[in-house]
Image (cartoon, rainbow, N blue to C red; front, side):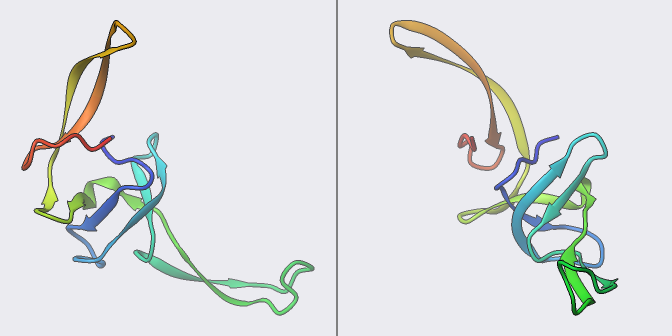
Length: 109
């Protein structure tokens, strides 16, 4: 899965087409994400001790990660690639796998 918590994404298909938001939670096993302000649903809640009034609650529901793309300020939506970078840290070579934007080539992590 190319999406991580904290990424800014844009919805590219479905009922919420065109909306942008920040990823709040990622579920890699089911390939679903929760995005701030997107796919908001209403749930009826009975009164409880913690919520004595009950009522209708609104919250973001998870939806499939294939319906979103990473969004950048400069170029808009972009595809994500992975590459291995070698760096010298404290006189040692360190390799790590990073995500990068395929439009600009910039590292996202």
